[in-house]
Image 1 (tube, rainbow, N blue to C red):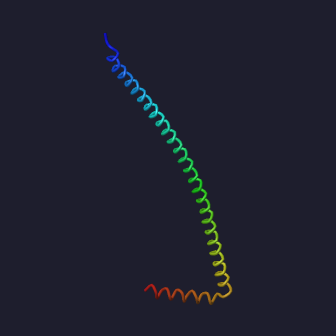
Image 2: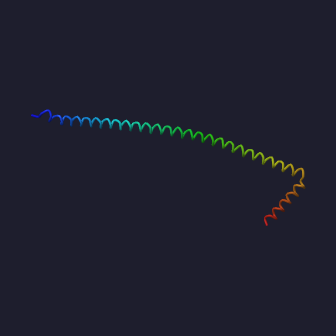
Length: 116
């Protein structure tokens, strides 16, 4: 029959195997928890990125609308000024037709000399 001293190493080995299995199970549980945490972090980042992209898009659209309004306003002002200059020119021609014709001839002559 086996003595207690012969059985002790076998029991110790069996206890070591159980201990290793327990450690492996704990590690597997920790790895599974880490994977869940990483998935959760990834989802949170996707949500934040989507929200920030939406905010940036809204800001860009607002700025675009403002720039568009400013551009229209500037075009309207330029058209108004051009209309005023045109009206002033017409009034001047009506008031002083001979001076206007002489000025036009002079400008035409100067341009002809410059383009030769």
